[in-house]
Length: 120
Image 1 (tube, rainbow, N blue to C red):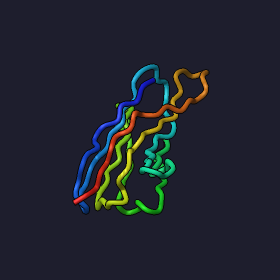
Image 2: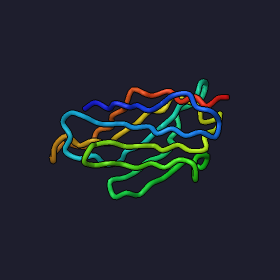
Image 3: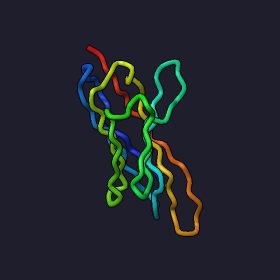
Image 4: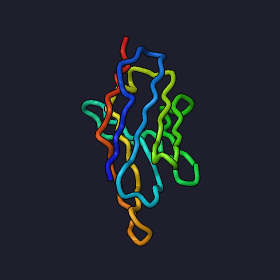
């Protein structure tokens, strides 16, 4: 299973970006899909997660500004980021809990990371 993330870039404060992450390979089902971020000198933190049933959770600092969604038919998770702030600058990583077959346990897979820079 491989995850391919895209959509990062340079944006001014107050701007928007949309990240995408698509899984490919041997996939039977995907439970949780999430986005993490890691800023220079800081630990990686969970930004948002969406479960197979559609429930979501967000870190407090992005609530009301970021929206996570998923397209199960495309094995893809999105992160719509609005009202971006300089403190949102980080490398963003996607994570998915993937089951490759009905009798196989769920394994976690990471995407390669995409840089988001918020600066004027």
